Length: 127
Image (cartoon, rainbow, N blue to C red; front, side):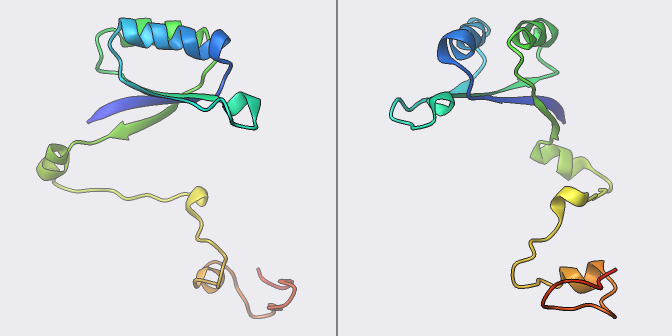
């Protein structure tokens, strides 16, 4: 199991991406870099994605350097297959962000709401 920090930025090439790439190259951190000079959205011309793992001996130094550029990570837990093989049990949890899509009513209305006084046309009445 590893705790990983995923960074993704579309910031200015000169101001953010170029210096971040220098840091990542110095510490031999793998990253994905994309350059699309024809992109109509100026801030999307350059993209950079990389992961920092807390088990990296240089993690705190790297994080301190990267934090200077204001790029915020998504933090998650990453498991190896061996972690699953050794586990005695699992907990699965969901949250509101995993709400089923409403297209074609995949049963979420009946599972989520009391539809006793519900109008299918306007949606009023679901509790």
